[in-house]
Image (tube, rainbow, N blue to C red; front, top):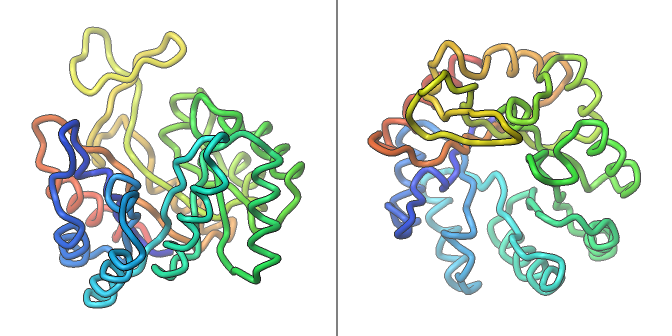
Length: 260
């Protein structure tokens, strides 16, 4: 497995804390092997600007784990083709899509095959989507029926949705698993203050990677190894109030480097 840092960690309500040049350099110096480039970072970039980003990636001997197509169904197809062009320039093998139109997912897969493009697309098993529940996500993958489409697991969303990130469940997902993402979330204690997430009547809180009540990262990684996953491990922790983002990025890298 290889570890990548998401640009999410430097996103704020007022924009990005770091330029894309700084972000790639920082990720490299900390010890990450790749980066997830967010729409907030490259969404408005021209192809010439993307080529410059690729030069920076190469300068630091890094890779791009994936990029995202944020367009909804109405504007999806044109948006997807633009993102695909960027993905090809960046030489990434993965694009995350965020749509629920099965026909459009199939059309995207077929387009990639017809044009002999070896990039895969995936949906994150995210709360509030048709991919939230394990059985639903698996059934959709079967309905799509293309090997260049799959899923990304993220245990924090399992916690939010009340599902176990057990070996049994990961084995079910494995035939469709092409990416993994990580952040730390746990149930909030009574009257606890912090980065609170309210979901379906439950209160959760964001926490640091070493929180003993948070995600069991060691167990999750070891289970991924056991079932045969050998892809990207993406750290997608967002910026947290009052905590330096570079420090969070370092702590995650140090922790995960010990796990695989």
